[in-house]
Length: 404
Image (tube, rainbow, N blue to C red; front, side):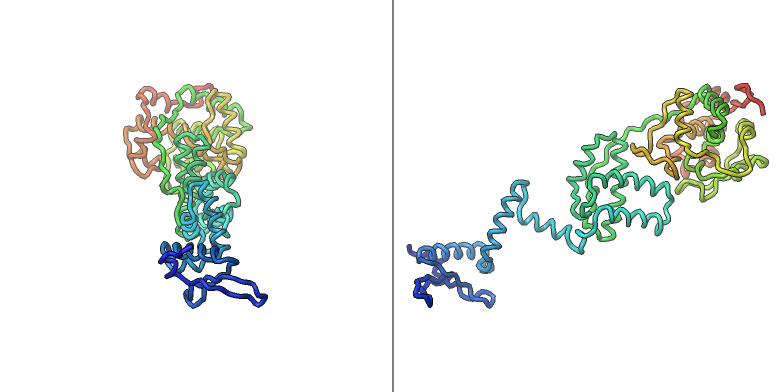
């Protein structure tokens, strides 16, 4: 065959006789970056085809293409076939590795990164156990499906498919995106990963549900059953929830020393107040004082052990549906998580009835420890008539046949 002009310019073909007397044809491409590029063939036709091929490669990719060994070329061909099955290319794979595989990050598993993150939040940022516990719940659920994965290899498309597979309600989906986003933001800032895979995942719109508040009849029933089942130890929780509006997580940290009956107030110390909430003093109403006298102690916790199970039993006796668990995941019983509740009907009942009774949003806001009036009106104000509020604040022990 006659060589093309580009092949003639790319190299030369010459005959070579080996020491054994065999005829060979040599394709000599000259020196490229200081190294001579030569290859031997049994016949001239094969040598000419090789030279034409190299000439075409040089024309497309430059002289560096002529240095690629056959083994690398074969590997590239095989990799390209495999990548094409998932709609990717060698260039895509290279970009992925450069983006996610530097700084030795492939050596850090998701589980190791989660442990480091939670320690950072608890030790270095001094975040309270309730907050860290919520993050731990979300991260535990995520790690069940991505355990032992190198954190750098977790992609946004995988995270979105994972969320879709759970079929969560919009609120739970939004909360997982938020909590997992906090974790991956930390990993990005620590340069463990290049990009937070949850950053571009859209949060769903959540329709606000009207929080439940107890009727006067339900409040009486809760108090009556809590008093009758003294061994459960729930009367302090019920009366302080209904008539002081204290958060469940705050009640879990309180002691009877915080209830100062002789001075008519309850102290919510800084170490008791919910994270970012205002430490405050709550006035003890006349009816709350009477209920507290039925269960007051000098020292000790205000809520019993195994609180959540006991609270749910009380709800069942009264005929009230138990509240959904935090973030759609049932937290372990014990510790701070036992006092977590997504919606607190006791606190909502207090806020709505206190606002109508006193007609003073600022006072209700201070009693509840809210930082802004907008939170009070957005989350805690329910339609309660003045007659209903008056009846609510006259629920004394005598109203259900009890005496001090």
